[in-house]
Image 1: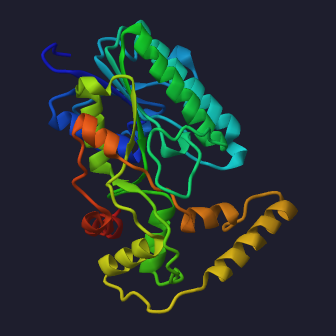
Image 2: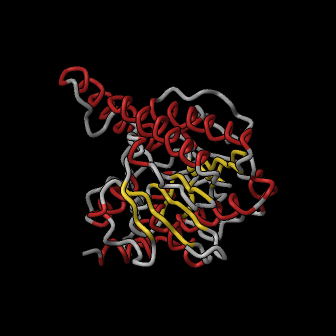
Amino acid sequence: MACSQPRALVTGATGFIGKKLIEHLLKNQFLVRSLVRNQQNTLHLPQKIEIIEGDLTKPDTLKGACTNIDIVFHLGGYAHTWEEGAKHHHAINFLGTQHILQEAIGAKVKKFIFFSSVKAVADHEHCIDESWDKQPNSPYGISKRQAEELVLNAKNKGMHVCVLRPSLVYGPEWKGNLAVMLRAIDRGIFPPLPEMHNSRSMISVSDICQAALLAANHPDANGKVYFVTDGIAYTTRQIYSLMCDALGKPTPHWHVPFWFFKLIALIGDMGKKIFRRRMPFDSDALSKLFGSAYYNTTKIQRELGFHAIQNLKSQLPKIIYQYRNAI
């Protein structure tokens, strides 16, 4: 690798955000090395990057991963929030972060940017900022919070460290509940949602990549934690309506009442107790659909000069184009 260009290691490179981050790094003249568990999953990565195999849960496989690297962007993790995955959260999100961080420290890497989650703190019904410090209670959130503490402590070893807490990320090739919702609306099988006046934060994948570069390059980011959103408080009904409009479908003037969703959630909870496995719709799904998760981004705007360029409305046409033309 040439010494004139910054050299970055990206973990979680084959994921939704990781692939887009690599594009941003290459455009900004970075030399990129990606850490993947299996090279067979790298067909969609740019050919100009270096690819190495390694498993975050197996520190012996990480030897040399950080050699001649200036900065680590750590995105690798286990994102499922179900209770059953507690051991995986600890092994991948906490111990995995510990393993790659130790490797980075040993290789004298200068900077370490950690992609955490808004779930590293407990939920609140109102808008919260980084001063909200209540501990999370989910295995996923706990593992992310513990990993944050590891990363922040590395500042004492002379490393520039920063923790980013992205809200729900959208963009072409996105996955997860809202992607399922979009496909269901397109097929005409998603029920019209009531307006519950909840507030949900989101962020485009390109904007979270922009935030990562700011976190890496701005000296004021060292030792800091930042929520990252596009600054808009979406209600679930608004998200539904935006999707209908972008898909070219009329938004129904009627809606399925909230009590019906609550009833289905209660049935799902009972089903879990009876069959000892999670049902497709339960109280947790109800909370994700209609609850609030709203975060203040004043800190990253003030300290790093971050300003989101995209919003859900502007990105939905690209998302839909990719979804409809996916092979």
